[in-house]
Length: 210
Image (cartoon, rainbow, N blue to C red):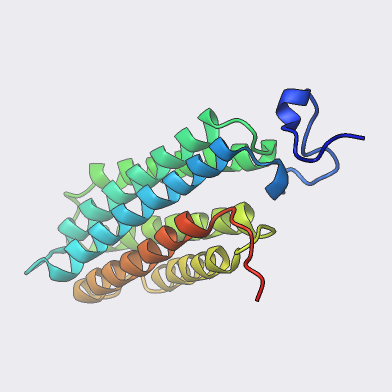
């Protein structure tokens, strides 16, 4: 019988045989993969909180400022997701592919936002709500796929739900006022960032028995 404590990658076997392509198996996930995922969550969370605070405390922040800040956030988030999905071995194939796809889409969204900040206020507001809304929904879906079956997945599921709801709220209000968009964007970024940092500390850790 195979020793469950042995690294399946060293043994040359597929640790995810018999599981779905998006199923992370805690005992088969290498320490390096866990650390990479935690680092990705931490970076994304810190950047999100910083961007959100900038929006909330910046006196006279405009929609252009909000668009630039959120564009930078999506660029960072997308790049981190792509790199972490590609370089770290030991992840299931579906998980890696989904991470790369979502990361690329976030990078594209960030680039589109930053290249079109000279649009009229009305057009900029529509672009802001569409791209940011879709981006947050993608991040929420990715969060569910990442951590649904892992220990301590409650924070990840909460993060995913908040991200998806925030995305849908924006998509349903494409013509909302500038001040509302800035405040909502700032608050959402801070909340999502805090949850992401918490995920960095709880991802892949066994539940503590009462």
